Length: 345
Image (cartoon, rainbow, N blue to C red; front, side, top):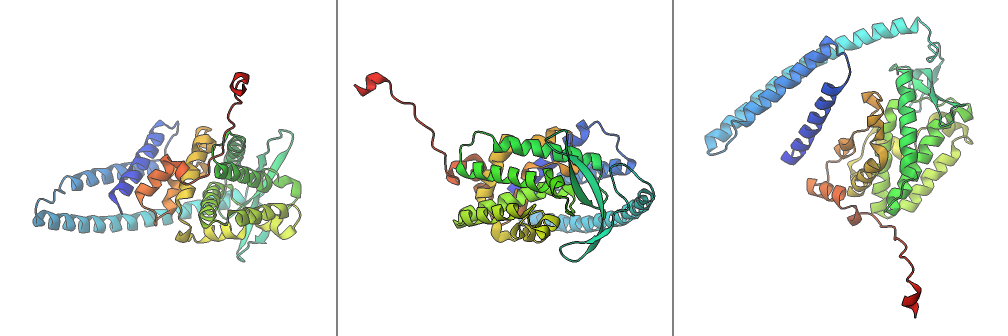
């Protein structure tokens, strides 16, 4: 991994740790143990870095030995963490059984079993998510395999609806950003906000929505660079038209097939700088807003998440796309003011 990439990830970790420290949250002992473990790792990294001078070959060999030792310690830590995860899963399963034996107003625990697109049978819980109209509500069916807190889902859906609407109605400088913003808002509104209108069997965890926004952006940028963006937009609009009219699409799919495949198994052929430029613009226009609305961490968008998909793009190209979108996108011309009458004489 390039040192610039390592630094980028470390800065993200630092920002996240600051959020942990600033959050008005009572942490469990196990979480505090994880914080301590993070601190120990940072101390260990500092110690190792202080030994790297490479003034002679012997130092380099010592560094290699240190790396080997770190790798061994890392594997041991991973094994311990896996053991802890197994224990946590067992506790979650026990808690799940207790929840299944109780009833709440927001989650339907006796929901029937349905079959997903890939044939896997899952139980379904229904969560009510508010729409833009306060007199109506949106019914989003959420996978019961991983319980989803209904209040967290409601809050996240409302925050994303507001953020995407804000982006779609913003004054855009580039054609591609304007089109993608409208596409994202129309998709979220029709597939999630207006889902209650279709009386359908659509089943989905709202936690995955932020990931789908990244993947739609990546696919859009990829097709801009492939110069077949019009076909992509026609395909996506055709998918949206089927929601509410075609039972199979309405009941089964959150996104078109191409995006669904990227979600299942990401293809690095889709790595593209245009998506970086688009995401950076949308972030500044309001995609970052859900972070400031107090929604649960698992729903929050993160600036670096889109770039984390990419392995085939150099860091300097990513930086250029973030700072110079005009190199990747088409500017929307502005109307020049008409000259004064005296200029026409």
